[in-house]
Length: 315
Length: 198
Image (tube, rainbow over all chains, first blue to last red):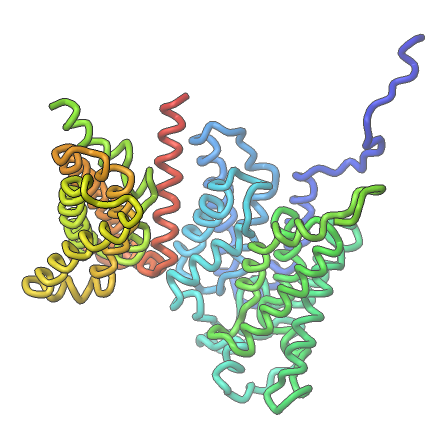
């Protein structure tokens, strides 16, 4: 009778979510973009994705055994990292490239820091920039979509950078992914499907993606090629890795700020950096570098946007 | 004798200037692109360290405490000038490869660090062995780092291509690769040390 009233500390309500469940949900939300990538670029895109995922899982498991930590390859995080890395690769890379990239992403991007939740940078992007710095000739050789001839072609952003007049590519083509690019970034429709799923289920909030995309759009509109306020902002949103980055990589729980205010600062920072790199930088696309730089700024953003504890003085 | 051996050996592993004291990273990052460069820089720094340690230990009683750093720098700069002129005369290619980093040995914190932390209080013989050990430890660290960077960054060891069809990762030949290799090696050695301590 005396045990009828048990008071435990909060939280008292549990949603039934876990890190692992969220990770698998993110993995599911990424699938449409992958399917679209395989349809657009052919089977090689599938092999690249599978190899990247298998290597990510294997690397995670082996390193956890070697460092005598709990093996957690089924929590979905390594799966998502491998998949995201593959989505950031051109479809016709040599098959050892995703293997090395995935290994580097998990080993140096994540496990060196102590595993899930400890890493400073988004592991998939660490893998991508490592490959980009190491084998630029493979990382920038984009093949055309299957329904054109199978020659290599530049991405729309690369053509823009070189000052070429864009071969009549319509917004609809860009939206559906009929363009050169990385496996998972081309089909905006599929990416938005996955993103909508995450947003509706509440796994990500709108703060980072919305501010990220909006600030890129505004900056590329203002500083257009023919003077101020002449930029093709819709083109900039639909091309490159902006959508993939904004919804699936900038929103990574581990490497983005905790508070809403911080997330808005983070999103704007990503957007500014992406636009600056695209407009004035050496590379045609800057989404991955922008997100990594803002990852580095995340601890300081968190520090200055800490929520005030009720009843205490403002910071 | 055993004590001298200890002075000599401590610089190689226990107090390795690169991996334990983490001194002299600027030349380490800059020149460790190839093993030849690493050895060249290692020998140059060892010579300077040896010379400056001996002289500073000799003049320790006559150097006023307040101006000791300028005095040390003059001594170090003398030896660096000797090294640079010798290198220019006998190995101009190496001198070109190492570039500004040879004269910069003057401000190498490892050389000044040993003068400040050790040689100005040690006997000449002790300072000699300390300088030799530290120099060799620095050289070995440079060889290790530059071997990794040369192999992965250009697919070569000592200028010889090892495997056909091996595609080198150019990041290791870049400054970012140097930071990466040094960071990972530091972490690895700390891991070993922690394991041993447990």
